[in-house]
Image 1 (cartoon, rainbow, N blue to C red):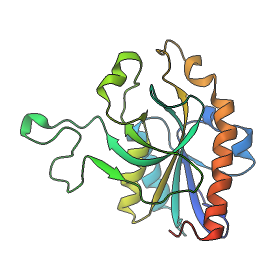
Image 2 (image 1 turned 180 degrees about the vertical axis):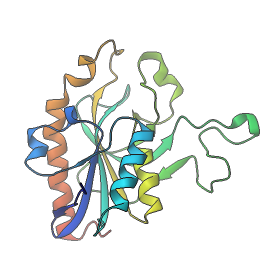
Image 3 (image 1 turned 135 degrees about the horizontal axis):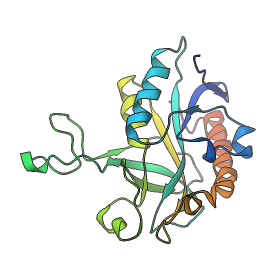
Image 4 (image 1 turned 120 degrees about the vertical axis):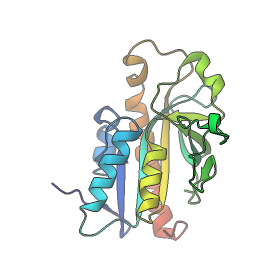
Length: 209
């Protein structure tokens, strides 16, 4: 079954999320996201398949959900100013770590669209859970497992992407699933507020994808 974008202030916008636990009642009242699954492989495959099957494609893709950070305020929502792919390491062949060989892209890719009223932070995407001392190996301010894959898919289809992430963990080392899920209800409400700000920005012309 094909998935259709939401209409936000008259603009077709495709919201994409990783997993149902992040999709709470506040977001359910506003959007109907495409669930792409957890991790960069699932994220790229599911989003590519969905966009390929759409009769009418969106004008904007919004990747939203939770993220970890040892530096940013827990439960706060940040928009992604730039995103990197921490899994890529072809340094043995002389390529800078984080850069995909033979692909003309910088290690960190800027996301140009900005929603007024939301703080901006850099993001690192990868297939591994980052916790405790592992944060010391990541240059970016927050970590997730899907946004870079969503971005590369969006770029393939010539579509802009906005990233929204609520900080669910990182202040303490992760030990069990509830260390990730305990604040998702708070983040759900905050992400819903960010969606409202996005709608206002599109309506006011601050965002013109």
